[in-house]
Length: 218
Length: 301
Image (cartoon, rainbow over all chains, first blue to last red):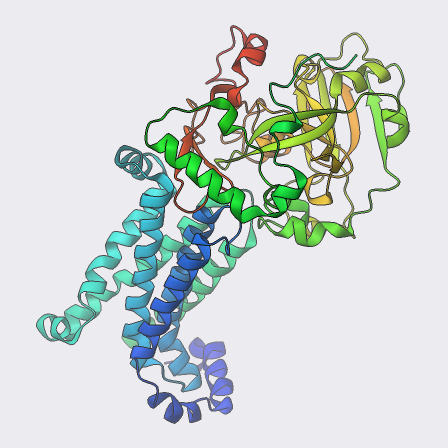
């Protein structure tokens, strides 16, 4: 491989390694992965409690819907950051990736349920929205794509599928996260930066993977 | 001149100042009402028109010059200087010029108007405005023959409005009405809420209120009024003409391309209240339907 093809990424890797975040790995090993599930569940319940008691402002339905949706997107992006983070900094969160992914799905599910039950609230309107509104359609497809991933996020499924097929299946996560980001851009009014920032971060993380795969096959 | 239209509600129907501080009790009451309607006990108009509390009206705002989240305006709008305030009046008027606000409104009658307020984002409130009929102001400056539209502009002060740093819209915020809409007795220029001066986040010191149109038509903190022959620039309409029409009358049968307009979330009703049906012309069909007689409301949305 010609050295300059891995130019700036290579330099970034070296510089990040100088920080030597891997020293934190020892401490992280002592944190049980269940902590992620517990914090996520508590967080979701706490937001629901706030919404029900006026803590999320005067229009709690949309507020709760958006908080769950945003947390889901942030956690999905966090899952995609685990591998690049390890490559560039040596910090390994691999142990927590499954818990992060399953929790992210939990927030997606909560987001969907608040929208369907507390916001729209009627079957015909839910179906009409999914069919007629492209940003809802896209969000819904993203949600459906994540279901098989959540169902196979366990050792049994990993063994049954085999590592290769399991990895292939879980690449759907890239697509679902991209759909989630576009869903966000699409639903805001006017040109707003927040959804664009998440999308840029996501595309950056995905591009790192593409480069890596290219260099692997080269 | 004023009093062309009379409220079917008075301040007696509004939540008294002392009571709306005690918000939680009111919320519980509202939840009870919504529960009753959900059980099929019918929808009494007067019950629906219980005004929202001061807190709800002033802490849940869209005013993108101060940021795009609902609390941004309440947090950031304090920086806006509203005194002194001048309004430039130009175009097809007899008396153009830069008017001091006090001078422009001097002697005109301030009325209380309790109106439904429906945002294009499908949430709604009921707001007890204090304001002056726009027709009175237009008559004062003298509308000339040939004027068909009224254009409005929001003040543009980058050092006082942090949201102007972002190109969410083509600033300054601009809106417009057809002259007959502007002269309609329901159309007011609001200077107060609950009898108190209108807070900055709600459009101080003076804003338009057109209760049968989506909220974004009711432009805030107006610094310029122009009478024009042709349809004027309207910010949201220009930003996305497919989603936001020039008219933007509240219409449950014409959906926004991205969401349904058939129902709305009533602000303050709580997490479990669900949606309520949106009314044609936001409940002002009797008063304004004749303005649009013979017009295809699906084509001119």
